[in-house]
Length: 102
Image (cartoon, rainbow, N blue to C red; front, side, top):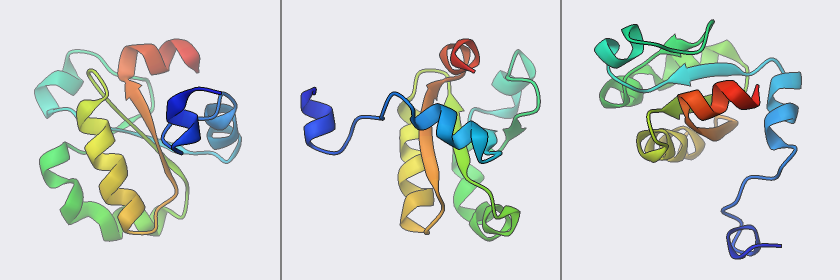
């Protein structure tokens, strides 16, 4: 078990499959321009700078959320914000890596 897992910060290897099995919504938090240049099919684009304003809308989905971005930094911030608002969320990291794992 790695240090991140001991601290409770690492994702469990099966976490992604659990979220997918629960029909999780993939939210890409990059800018609209970045999203337009390539994204995971079926994902929704809610840029990080507007995600706080969309929390109530996201809660209404009543589904877990997987957030992604270019490298994992912005999605980490988004995941933290959503978790603070009692939304079941996981940081999927960079969208291209997440796409390969799906």
